[in-house]
Image (cartoon, rainbow, N blue to C red; front, top):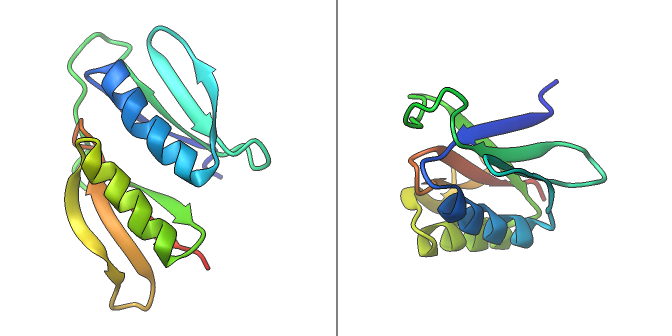
Length: 122
């Protein structure tokens, strides 16, 4: 069972602004904050997302083929999450829309290049 996903960041303040806005749209709250890391989660579910300055002090980098999926309430929320991401320095990796296998999703990268997608659950 996966209970958390953590992305490295080069700029904790910039990453916090990006994920605070997405967390607000999703109804998530910060559950952890240190001088090197910040985490958000749904208190009822316990599953979370975090960003961190790499422990080893080296530059944060993205994993090729690595992606985290955000469960959105519906297609309209997928659209809003994608728009929020692009407004706050994220890059488009696939505009919101119906995918070949029948689900509605949008793909984007955060300001550090980490890939995420939002998928409509309802």
